[in-house]
Image (cartoon, rainbow, N blue to C red):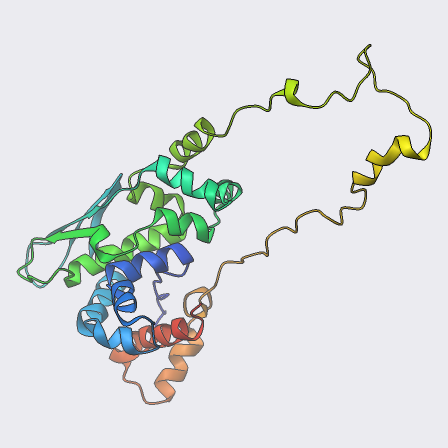
Amino acid sequence: MRRGTVPVRGYAVTRWSRAFVDVVEGRTDIADATGAQRAGSVTESVDSRRISKARRYFRDRHVHRLSIRPGQVTASVEGSQLEPFDVILSMRTVDVDTVATLLRSRAGVAEVMSVARGEQPPIVGELLGPTESADVASQCTCPDESVRCIHVLAVAYEVAAEIDRSPLTLFTVMGTDLPSLLDALGNDSGTAPDESAEPNKSGANGQSKVRDGSAEHDDLGAVDFFGTRAPLPPLPRPPRGNPLTDLDGTALRAALRASGVAPGDIAEAVDELGDLYDRLVQE
């Protein structure tokens, strides 16, 4: 009897969650320090052993009681001891008024409502999400004294998976929500135009003047009847998929077994392929 296969759990398959994981793993800090993010250089600089084991913890569902509250994430993680370890992620929360101001200055207000439709507009994620590892403080009750232990990374991957499912999760993680941002945008949307300052184009009786002669219709030339001067809409940004998680992995696992990969190493090989795929499609 053929044993059933378990789908590989995925995380960081969307733009916002990938950026969140990069910050937690310290990849953005390394890229800033080197001046350029070269393929291969970041992964070797990060502790690959911890990352591989944390991925295994995530894949095997070692994270329990995940709680995402405004500005803080808590969870317990099964580790090498009998009792699970407690993990706390504390965020440097955002100020919605500042985010709203920056969105206006960068013409990104229209992108906000797309979040409610499940989209992840880049400009909103850049202003809302963490940008450096110091934005995400971590604590764990395990004996590992490193800033990002295996259990912290596993919890971060669970958070990334939640962001993949719902972009609104990032709002909660960073200490706010979509209604608060919309209120901040609405409170400073600008005052209504002063109609008294508009030039008077009507007659004394309040009705439009009807004027004859070509000279009287010069203002019609300013009307763009065919929309030739209308601004073009932004290019679509379809979400980037990940074939390792979006497609059935049965054929891939069979190919790995046929190539000589040991059964116990197949899951890790799939993770390594995922890293290679991320490098290929990096923006």
